[in-house]
Image (cartoon, rainbow, N blue to C red):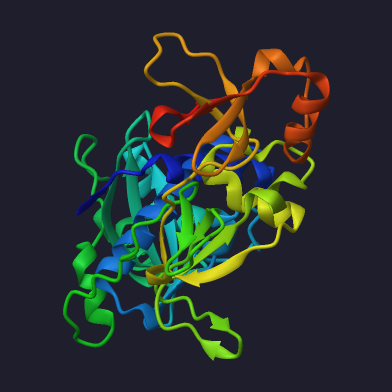
Length: 333
């Protein structure tokens, strides 16, 4: 068995995708998404990347409706469905067959009430489950009331369905996460970008006709994000990929080792504070060069587009203040 602890990005995406899916039972769909994320981590750790595929990977990463595929994963040519429940009785052979008998394999995942931890209990062939149900009905009679049989094989036995290979450990090596501010290495005056998507290591990406040798990171630039219909800075970082996909915001793909964390992460329009203050007022970045020039939100008297901030402050006589980069930090909004 394996424990999976979803991080903040996983939990936000699982919830928002369930909402976008329009499921009648959003809670069940969210939990199901977490179960798929748990099994994806198992596959990435222990199975060769070219021999498994997650049908809903793009849908959950970008929080779009699923394609209504009949199964969640394909592993070594088998169609695999992940069943996630807090109620252990859902994993009884008869319950599993009644809810899903069309796939080849069912993976069972149990979750805690507050969904902060899941356990991959095991898996079983659907044919085996059907045989057990038939045998119980024909020969076994009634099961003990207090001792029900849960048919499952250890998770590691999935490896036996494919070639004999060592621990694959195909987790991403790059250090970036959605929302990180990055810049391209080796440029004298680099533009700051915002990480929107960190692509799985096995994703094949072509740049200028050549296949990318390394892990892909998709980046948007604040000026492009500012052109959208909403204030992207107010979104949870986990939903940036969904927003960019919905609004067709231009994304640029880089090899992860061609990027670094931005030395100056601030862009015009960012919400910032002075962390040294006990009760800091929120300010907006007007200019960001060697110094970060800001104006306080309370002075503006209304919404001003980032591209208009500098001119607006000058024409309206609104005071601005300059600080070193180390004196300011991003505000939680």
